[in-house]
Length: 131
Image: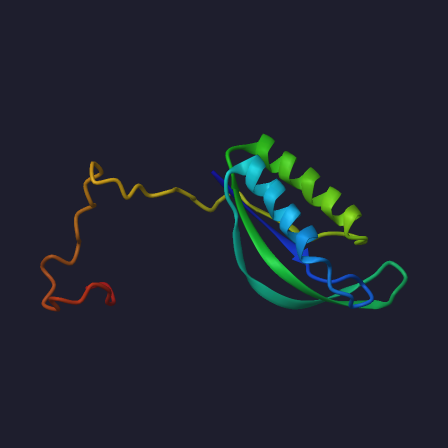
């Protein structure tokens, strides 16, 4: 799996919020194509437009795991289309090819990995610094 991230603007360049159903439709299209996404939070950024003006953008960070290079290309094309729909000059799109992404099974048939801290003197604490 290849991790991709894009920033989804929450309002237009005049500061008018996009309709909630428009943003929901964008998320639904990504979900339908790739089977999942994460809205990793909101952030505020600034972008110098081609005409030299500075746009202030409040965005949602969308993280999507795609199966292969073809998935990266499909998502990139979708993000470009979203930018056109939202009236954007450009859209932030990031590919993290060196990030290892896996979905860990929580099935009872999957044995848990060995705990490297079994010999640790700190007992009864689920999460602590490595020994």
